[in-house]
Every structure is written in C-alpha cells, then in structure tokens.
Amino acid sequence: MTAIEQSVILQSMKSLKENLTDWTDWDQAELAIAKSLNILSPDSEMTPDTKGIFWSTNPLGNFLADVLEQMSEIGILEFREKPDLQFRWNNDYTLGSE
Image 1: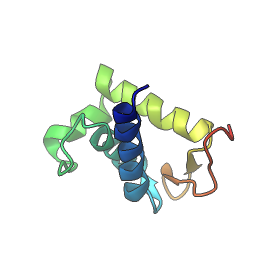
Image 2: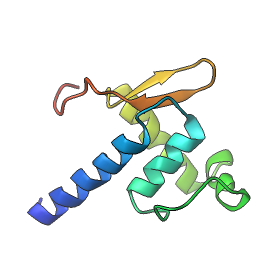
Image 3: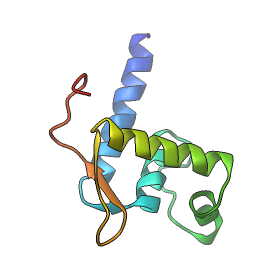
C-alpha cells in the first residue's frame, strides 16, 4: 500500500470516527460510512432519495450493512439494541486488537 493510499484510508477513518462519536441509529451510521468512503458526498443527508439505499434490499445498501456489522464484530464500533439499533466509535479500539 502506498503512502497516498494509507493517507486516504486514515482520513476516511478519521471522518467516520468524528461522525460516530455519539450513539447513532443504524441507518445514519451506514450513511456516515458511505460518506467516509466517498460513495456519497460529504454533505449528503438522509432524504427520500437516499433513504432507499438503506431501507431496501440492494447491492449498495447490503454492502454498507455488512461493513457496519463487521466493524462492530471486530470492535471498531460499539453496538446496542436499545432504544434502537445504534452504533458509535469505540475509543478503546486499537488496530490489531481484534
């Protein structure tokens, strides 16, 4: 991996960390992932046009759901079921701790 690629990945992770500091509903967490990966623009919001990505079965929505689940499983994100399915950045996570 080149230094430029590493820089892009670190910037994406920083953006995601900043957007998931508080408990965040699952669809908003998926939106944050899409924005951090530049799949959606950084100023994208949950609108009727974007909601379909997250609330229906489709390749992009399924991919984002899988990423969210895997990030939770390896400990990058914390997960809770109540009051809703929510995620937040795990400040105790360190690379290689999974």
